[in-house]
Image (cartoon, rainbow, N blue to C red; front, side, top):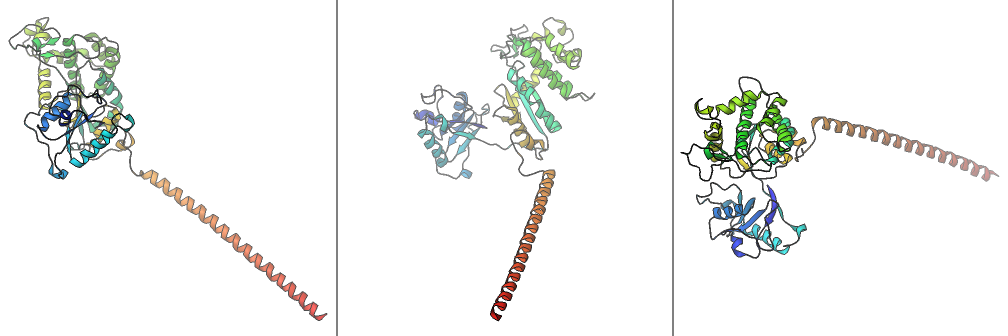
Length: 417
C-alpha cells in the first residue's frame, strides 16, 4: 500500500482518534489521495480508532505507541468488535511516530514536502499458484476496465493466477421473509438488491440478474469439467459486455445474449443455469415474475462467501484470502500476485514494476564474449605498441653507435695530423 500521511495538528481529540472524524480542520479539509491517518495510542481501543479512520475515508491507520518500547514488544489488540473493519492498521514506535509528526507539522501546507508512505504486508504463499477474487456488482465500470486492462497480465501468468468473481447483493431495508410479492429494483421479494452504479442502469433487479448470469458464465468457462472450455471465454464476455452494453448504456438481457452469441457461447445454456439457480418447483417458475420473488442459490452462496470474508466495500479485491487495499493499476496487481508466488516465473521480473536484479544466462554469455574480445584487442594493441617501442629503441641505439664510431674515427685522424 502507499498513500499520503494525514495528521490533525490542531484538534487534539482527532490526534487520539477516539471520536468520529466527521470534519477535518482547515489544514486537512478533505481525506484524499488514499490517505494514511496517524493517531496516538491511548484513551480508547485501537479498534475504535481504526473504525473512525475507516469511516472518514482513510485507507490505513498508523497508531503511535504511547511508550518507549521496542517494536517486538508492541502489539495491536482487537476489542472484539473489529470483524467488519476492512482497512489495515500498524503500530509504530513512539520515536518513529514523533519523527513523522515533527516533519509533518513543520511542512503543513507544502505539497512538495508531503509525506508519502509505503506499507508492505507479506502475502500467504500456499503453493505455486495464487488466487485472486474480485467482489463487485455488474454495473461498475471501473471493474470492467480493470479486467480489460489486466487480461494481458493474466495471460502472462497463465495457470499460476486463478481468478474468481463474486457478486454483491443486499437485503431490502424492510425485507420480510414472509413476503412473496415483488419489490422494486430487487429479486427474491427484496432479499437481493443492488446499489446503483455508474452505468446508468436504474433497475437493480436487472443488475442482480446479470450477477447470476455472469456467475453462470464463470462456472461454464472455469469450472466445467465435462468439456474443455477455455477460460478466455469469460474474459471475452466481460470485455465485450463492457464495450457493447456498459459503455453504451445498453444494459439489458438482449445485449448480454448478443455478446454471448458474438463470442461463441450458447445463450440457452447459460439461461438454463440461471433458471435452475432459482429455488422453486417448475410450477413456481411458470410465474412471469418468478425471478422477482423466488430465492436464488447462487446469490445465497455469494452472500455466505462475502460474510465469511468480511467484505464490506464494493468493489474489493482479495489475494489468497487477504484484502488488497492498494492501487488497482494492473501492473500493481500483477506485482502483488507475483509476490504471493513461491517460485516466480520470469515474467514477474520483465513485466509490472519489478525489475530483475542481475543478468540472464544469454546476457551473461554475450557480456563474457564482449569482455574477451575487448581484452584480446587491447592485448594486440599493447603488443604492437611495445614492439614498435622496442624497434625504435634498437634503431636509435644503432644510430648512436654509428655516430660514436664516426666521431672516434674523426678524432683519431685529427690527432695524427
